[in-house]
Length: 259
Image 1 (cartoon, rainbow, N blue to C red):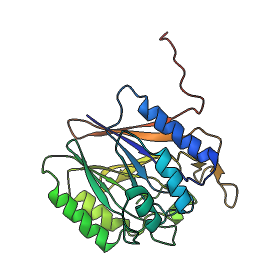
Image 2: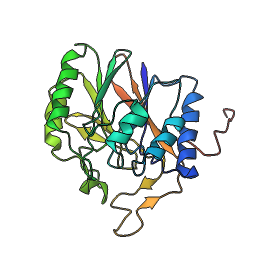
Image 3: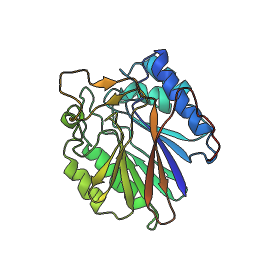
């Protein structure tokens, strides 16, 4: 099996709180009996895209497990590239793919500079088609991006989700190797389907955003009380994806004896 850890919306802001919460999640992953094969960070790494915030993120997200981040709407592509990827500054989409065992992970940049909603450019679609063409014929593929391509019944996120999701749906539906799509952005654990595949939305390590049954705008929308959380995706030998959402207590885990 392949174990993929997904953290999202860390919102590093040079304050102690968000950094400590992300640190706790990374420590939890490092202490697992069976550690993840990879850690994916699905956007909004920083709160406002400042170079100092990326410097903070680089320190906290350092691990001896491969860590692959993509930007979200709060990020800045140029600063993201230089600080986290060690590449020259550029405003072009940040797309990258990695082989994790027999799994191909394609990370898509859905951010639009200066906007809260998301879009995948034609450049990104061309890149993705190339990744799919190069991937092994009999091996699974996982797609990751920041903006959810589906209605989540969130009074905030549904207004700033992925535009033109039908274009991505065509790609997903046409390739049976794609086992699922994972995103962030919603600050809430959620599971649905998209183009006939699982769509899993990771929680934020920083805060929780309520659904329309909880919120009536313009009320306070963010809940900062819950513990940080993450998603753990298992891809088994049958190319089936199983997801567990896990909260990580800031005080640490407590060992108990079975009853």
